[in-house]
Image (cartoon, rainbow, N blue to C red; front, side, top):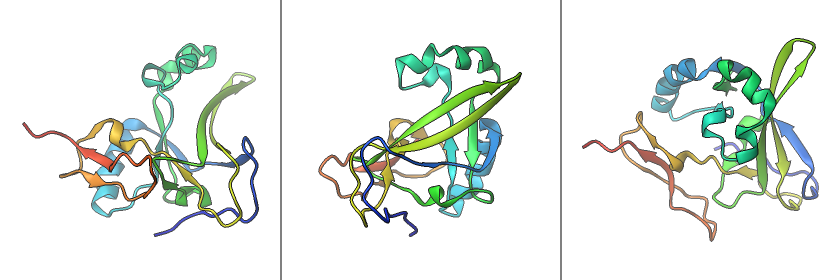
Length: 164
């Protein structure tokens, strides 16, 4: 298993890295994701859909409203990604993700940036919360247990879709 570790102490709030890769539609991501899941490797990162945004502020962001016709999007880092694709999940992560959209002239651009949620010690693994257990996933046959080992562990990394 790959991981990304801090090579020096990182202060809370510090910019860490952008999650980069090929920007694709979620329809294409769903198609690719089926194959990736069968290979047990997945470097897809959903960008914020304003209708499903976790943050109330994101739902009302004027840039998201202006460009909502092109959302939702996804980043596929399998071929064109950087080392951010090796950041693993934790139910008690030390990094947070911000989905950013902006505009320059008449073009909209998208970024997914990671920042330190707290001070990260030298040698500590950098982690984010994948939130894969928040929704049932149709392409997995059974629940996948979380093995992050934190006190706040939710015990489930991925939740399989109910087959009733």
